[in-house]
Structures are given as C-alpha cells and as structure tokens.
Image (tube, rainbow, N blue to C red; front, side, top):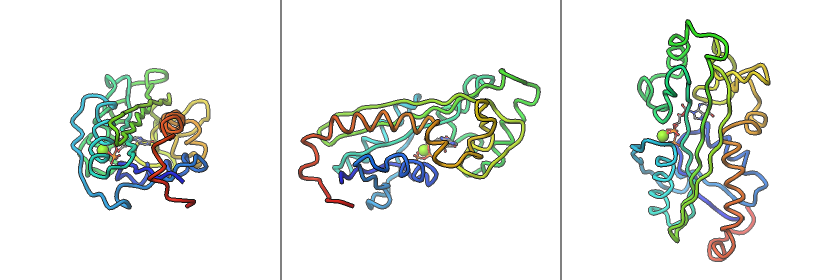
Length: 209
Ligand SMILES: O=P(O)(O)OP(=O)(O)OP(=O)(O)OC[C@H]1O[C@@H](n2cnc3c(O)ncnc32)[C@H](O)[C@@H]1O
Ligand SMILES: [Mg+2]
C-alpha cells in the first residue's frame, strides 16, 4: 500500500479521513503517528492558502507525500463567518457547546433560508518533488435552532441538512462522508493521487498493510 501522511491533529477529521480513504490503495498515517509534532501557523486568508501551508511544511519535515485539510463553517447571515477562523472562533479552547450556542444566538431573529450556511473543505497535497495540488468540497445546509446529535465533531450538532431532515451530528459516519465537504474534496483528491502515484511510490512502497 502507498503510505501518505495526513497533516492534522484533529481526531474527528482523522476518523472521517480513514473511512473515506479505505479501499483507495493509499494508507493514511496521521502526522502524530508518523512522529511529527509541528504546529503550522494558519495565517492564510483562504482555505487554500492554509491547506497548502500545512501540507508543504509537513512534507518538508517528512520528505513524504502529505495531505492537509483546511475547513470551516460559512454562515451567510454572518458574512461567511467564522470561515477560515472556525477553529479559533470565540477562542480555540472554548468548548463547541458554547461556540455552537453563540452562533445560534446570533441568528435568533433569522429564519428559513436566511439561516443558510455551508461547510467548506480544501484538501491540499504536497509532493516531495515540489508539486502541489488542491481540491475543494462543500455541503449546503442551515443553522439549526437547537443542537442535536453526538456523531462528528465541531459545528456538526448545529449544521442542519434539509434534504435529510437532521444535523450532520445525527448522521452515521458513512452518510456524512458521502454528503460532506470533506468526503467530496477527498474523493477528488484520490483521483489526483492515482494520477501522480505512478513513479513516486517505487521507493516508498510499504507493502500490504
Ligand atoms: O488544522 P488541523 O490540525 O487539521 O485541525 P483543526 O481542527 O484546527 O482544523 P482547521 O484548522 O481546518 O479548522 C476547521 C474547523 O472548522 C470546523 N469544521 C471543519 N469541518 C467540520 C466538520 O466536518 N464538522 C464540524 N465542524 C467542522 C471545526 O471547528 C474545525 O476545528
Ligand atoms: Mg487548524
């Protein structure tokens, strides 16, 4: 199997990524498991800039193919906030129960389609030969009136998907992955990895794992 490192410390992302990459022929190792403990400063103004920065810095530290995910919640009524600041919104250490309530409070007088929001995910791949590629996925929804569900992570309990009548935190992992921003971005990235894989992995093939 072909080994690649995923530059994330978010356990929720890791669970989803492992499931999405199953059967792809690529074996994904979280950076911590690969022995890399670096904090990349996410100071870009777009998901693309931050995803590329995370992938390239960890690729330079590991000399392996590295994927990174930069993602977030865009709430239309809040001018697309928290957006790239989703992890830092109201402070990195503030529990999501509090952050989620703050977002619902800001939308207290807003109803129907005006509660529209989306999750965005940009996945970047950085290759040791200097090549970089990105893919993007989104899922449209609305901010719920109350927090529901205990699957997923982050803003999932307040992200209501009208077509399914529930939040992404109420969905089993497989269903969320089929619909989600991360599922779509990673499916597109699998294609790119397959195209680029030829010639890259001869010296880096770890056998069946
Ligand atoms: O940078 P890494 O280490 O990957 O982990 P992170 O949690 O800091 O991740 P980001 O910088 O990409 O910030 C994205 C934030 O957006 C939110 N988010 C992204 N995808 C989500 C999803 O599928 N469900 C719920 N919240 C999500 C969540 O709060 C994340 O912490
Ligand atoms: Mg981050």
